[in-house]
Image (tube, rainbow, N blue to C red; front, side):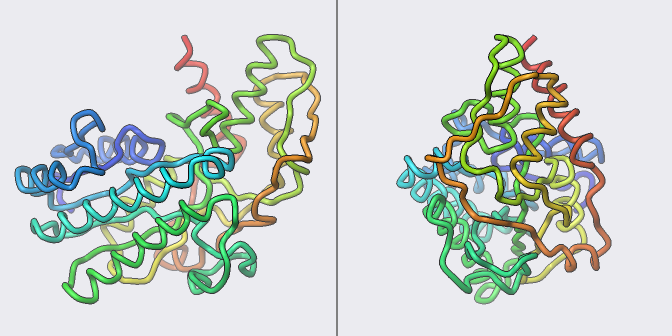
Length: 309
């Protein structure tokens, strides 16, 4: 991937995509192509076909996706499976047929079995039932990984797939209808701080263990693997460390500066009991995360405040 290579970042306004854009800019890649959804609807096959025929990108970062937390996945599963299947099918196929040299597909750790052994190894992929609260999204991601592998096997297309853990960082969604747990908690504690509310509601017991990766670390890993990795085997991307949701809430409360008490809503689901990725494969390739969780939350909260000024 040369500095003047034609690079297309699909989903450049999202959490992962915007981080990849920042990384490419910092590395002086000068020929990066991006389109908003209003400019290019990736669920529209004809539009995708015309785009690839016109621009013929040499490298594609496929980070575009319909994403959300437990609430969004549970209440809008049809949107999650339909839109993600369409996006990845159109982009992977068009990239291959129009001569793209390499494509990177962003999977998701939720595509692993709900009760996979911990930490989760790449070999655990498709070995058991999925978590019920995000099955539709997970199945779409599984299909994307399978498609990338199939196009490599049958056509020799250099498509690689990453399996990132839970992401957070600048550009995240904070509305409670679609946000993931870290962003949701940050939004709740900030609102409580501003309003003086005495309580913040935490879904579930707070006992599930989660691993969190700053979006800038994900972007760094994505560019690294685009440059140095070529295999059908998926690659886990994470920090190798996890934290309980309750301890995460306490950490976010401290960073935000809220004094609200945490109240558990036990009528809401916990989701997967634990999800920690085995990152041995990525570490062996020579990459590791550099943003610590507290520092990452502090950076994210500064960006959160800046967006509201």
